[in-house]
Image (cartoon, rainbow, N blue to C red; front, side, top):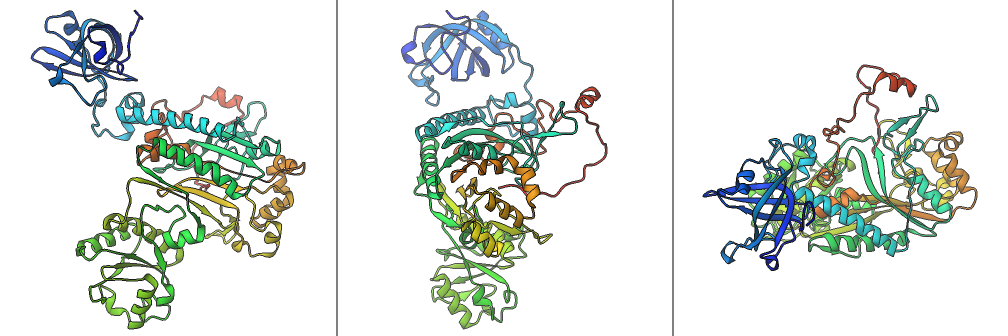
Length: 595
């Protein structure tokens, strides 16, 4: 018999009764019923129940052990009997009568419960992450991640893509986020940068003639944490294709996502094909460029209705309305709670009216609306008895943010939200440039390596803020999975686009000399995308926080509480790297998070 096990803890069935077996695993739980010990033994594969009779050496040994001790046990498989079967376990028809016990790894008293969710805080969980990962939910999430990545690789190869690696040590690149820098020992005063993305290298692979590339790529950005973003590092499915237009990129990615979310989505429907929604339409209808389409309500611009209105609170402002049908039975509490929610999003309040059975409008602002206002609203929103209408007024961005959140919340509260589906969409036609709200300078709004719609002519003849780019995002259930673009592959277009964004020719050549040099030696039209692996798994696992699907994440302050990173470095090492440490508080550097 094998030194440690003849079977794993998820393997034994009724057909194995009367078999002598050896198992190894962690002491998951223990119950003493009248002197008879029942032990749940756990390994990667599952749980098997052990039984030790009173007075036996096995019972004496097992009774003294702390939970999470690693043991080897020998014994015989016996039937539990029909009345004692545990239908929740694949091994629930049998148990092992233990005859011998060997301690393989003693365990101290554990700092939190493994076999149940005891509400321990995240800091403690991350400090003892190796214990946290033993929990069933966390183990399941990490194995889901493994299966998803394996499936991605198989599906991408089947779609004709080639997996290739790109450098980790590279040069800094102004892609929007802060770089992580690595000092060079051999070149004093100079630094490598960890890649924010393999952007330039994957484009160079297309120029080199490899046609279809993919990589499960590690990326590094010194950004603050969010529920859907890890500080420091993350993984993305990096994809690039040659001789393609936008729809050519969409087709394989849409097929991949449909198959992945169908295979691992636990029965949830995947809506397909994915709608294409222009950026400005998304902002107008949904208040967001990452709309949650499970909310089956849309915002409507009613600014014109109130442009000449006597209702001074709305006059001269951008006004967006949200019509919610089937609210006739909703109590006043429904409206008050939505108002409180809007205030939490930054609003001063939430104006509303409702349509009665006689089609008359009632509510806090109804008395301020003229007959013409009411008729225009009814026509614009196609109002019927039972509708409630919520309003937001202010500047476009402020109203979009607040009413976009209200749209989703109202849909959930009023029964116009679909829980058990994955609803994807493509957001297309992003502006190429935007104006910095603080400085007024023209900046790239998305990926600086994108091809402007209309090419060089558009850059030379249009107002920069009117130029659209061949840029796109893929969104699922309100989560942006990825940005992508058809790339600019023409040197003159690149010089002009970066010039509009404030980069002179010398700076462009210094920053992107390798890329420009490649463009001058025959570059094919190409484009790509890079869906976030962590976010894909987060959605499939139905987890609200991305750290729940990463084996060893940093915490919200970008610290590794298990290994103690970041850590100090001794003076000898600093000297070897030509570095010295300046003490005192760091001065924050404003930056714009990358898309």
